[in-house]
Image (cartoon, rainbow over all chains, first blue to last red; front, top):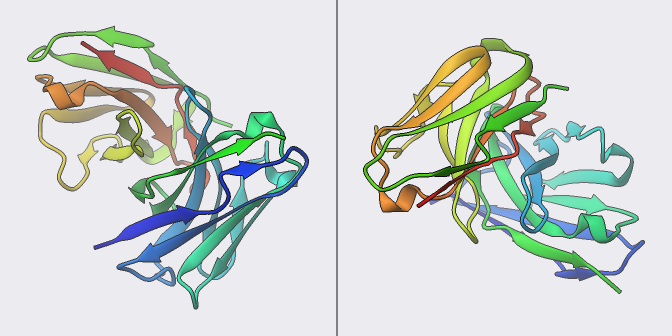
Length: 119
Length: 108
């Protein structure tokens, strides 16, 4: 059964780098049929797409976050990762990873992980 | 960038009633690249509809999507207790880039 699991620190200090990893089980991240995305949701607010990656390493970022975001993939570990630098309190959110069917809709999502930016 | 506006912000209904949710795009969404999700408290969003009108795997037929161009609708024919949640529309015309609507809360 396909599962996506986010992992990483739940607390990050302002101006530092937020780092999260999404591990896929029950499938292959090297499938040519899917992109792999990061989405976040500030407490009590809506969803914001952060960016996506293809197994080949091609990346696509939200223009509003592009200068601070790096997404990478490690096919040997069946993982992809998110780095968001120079974080502020506005980056406090639940961060989700998701599978994007041919880059389109998100048909499988991780359970999400809350990251709080605070000193 | 395509902006999606959902209405109403909150829909107050009873179990068994029909729910009609709207999603309007700031410009035409090509090939009906529009999806709907619902999200219950503390859970990840779950895909309901893709391609504007195709139900995702395991989604009951009381959920239906329609529309094209700039106007899309999600209809829940008879609300079940588990349907009370927040609903988001999402466009993927710029795939793999996504934008979401701000959400509609369906409450009892």
